[in-house]
Amino acid sequence: MNFEDLDQKEARKYSSGRPVELKQRPGKIYVIAEYDPMMVPPVWLKDDPMPHYPHELRLMNSLFCLLSPKHHQAA
Image (cartoon, rainbow, N blue to C red; front, side, top):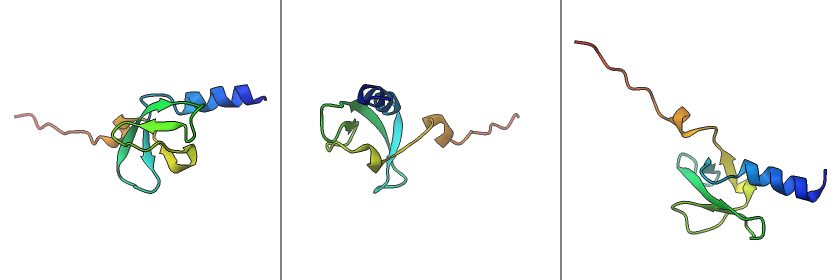
């Protein structure tokens, strides 16, 4: 595997719209705004002015897993 393959794999892993949690701020969910391999650090988050390195992030599978189901009672 060459560096180009690794870059593409990381770009897919940190693609725009993916929910993440900052390891230093557990409990708050962010969304990846942009991944730019030419930038150091390469990951930009929505609602956070600082870019981040991948090792600072915990990838979340889906925002839907964080939402608790609402139970409706029939009358």
